[in-house]
Image 1: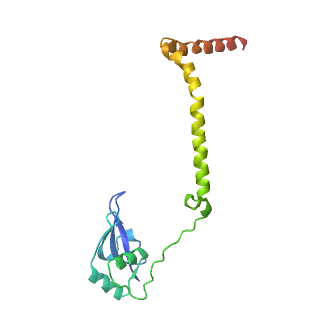
Image 2: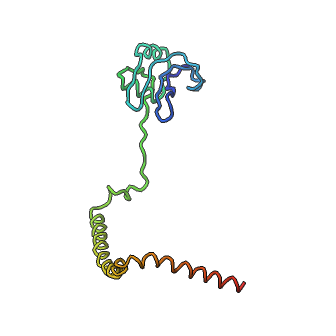
Image 3: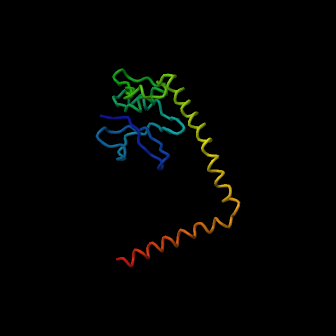
Length: 165
């Protein structure tokens, strides 16, 4: 049985497809193609088909894949009655009540007011530490000395533990 399918071509990340007629027992990449019918570029959504050849093969019983059937339908080709229309898949959402768009308006306002109160409380606590840091900023000499002092203390602690062992 003949199948009308798409054969992937193009480089990685920029795929293009050939629309081919092939024996259904072979894979699209095998290279055993009966006829080339056209091409499809998914990035620019352009399709080029030889419509006369397509109608000939459909008339002789070639079965198009679901994706090719959609392409043929978009191009305005009349599909035979025996060609099954591709089914559109519907996705089920598990917890629809947890979606933001389905939340009641009251919850949204409560969350925003809680964030506003947290923002208002935070600036009240910040001025006190800023006043304590002000004298330290005035004396830039004390800043380089501060990191140097803890380092010897750590060395002394290591020395004290060494004699005990």
